[in-house]
Image (tube, rainbow over all chains, first blue to last red; front, side, top):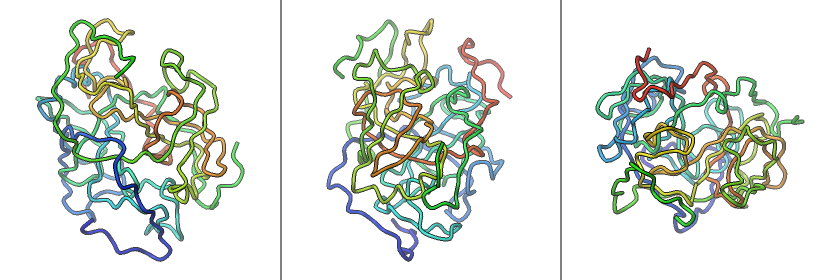
Length: 168
Length: 168
């Protein structure tokens, strides 16, 4: 929670449950050029930086065949993010937004997701392009990106309508 | 683990750590028409079924503005999946595959991901199209789908090459 900005006007948090429902293993770490949150790109396309995904030795056999994918989905754990906020006032927006309408790291389960371009794999280290996270971020999962099911170029966002208006 | 198929030839598991590194909250449940694993579509595009995502009352304020997204990314928890397998022999493949080259629910952190079309929201219930999971699956997160960063129609998979051959 250190480094978290003070609560902004109207932001709303909930009491989180006393216990967790399931547990995660960190399977590696992500090395990036960014050590301060303010330095991180807003998303993975805003930087050309090549980052390195280091997979723990235990899990490295699971990397077999991964080199056959041009793009991967990485899931990682935003371990510095507050988890109780359900309404947030993002700096870029003009009002309060529901947490699930944002890609903010602040959410009940701070699992971040990036689609990255795979440049190479060697000895449990993946060179990728398209990350936005702090150096040392814990890795949760690596998945192949399937254009057939994961790519939806037609997807749109209506950021202005608070309830979004009519939906098809 | 019940209902898990017996280990197939050559499949390899690892000793998982004794403790978890982070904890998850289930924030809701997914209602689908499928109550047996064999009935589930292989992916969310193989069915036109409209499914319902029920968000727990505690987290419902977080749904504000979500209706403005035509597509969402849902993260959910494959609570029946084995977690220790790093090499798997999928039924559709001709050999062993690394876990991270597959979208199988069997993985160290069994977080599944689907891109869904949002049809409507009412009282904490989202009607969506594009899911593939069992009825009652625990929900972890809802994110807006951003075509700009999440859609990569050019992504390709080389399923034949065990190490994938040359990468750009």
